[in-house]
Length: 131
Image (cartoon, helix red, strand yellow):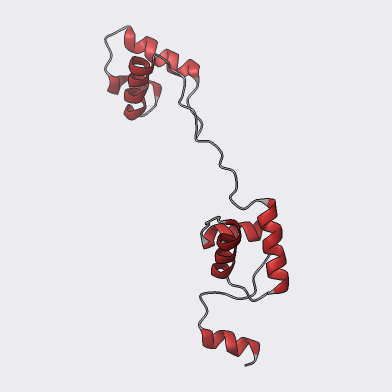
């Protein structure tokens, strides 16, 4: 959700400072939550600003293009690797720890698929391969 505009924030504070209105009435009048009013007034009092706090920084992906190339080569040479095995290989070679979920998302994003499902029982895997 986007932050409320500075213009709205200023109107809320002006109305509150003119007096005669409670924080609950202020929230109802401007159709915002009481929690927003409380936090806005606290931010003004403590930080001397009405600007919204900065949003969280965008994280750089843990799996760099170099690691993705390594993964592509691993999958090409050994197509029966599981996500757990790929996670272990990346951790061993590059000392980068990622979850299997992150590994799965990155592989899908790159168009690299795995043929084997790690949650399949061993007997089902052998039946599929004809063993």
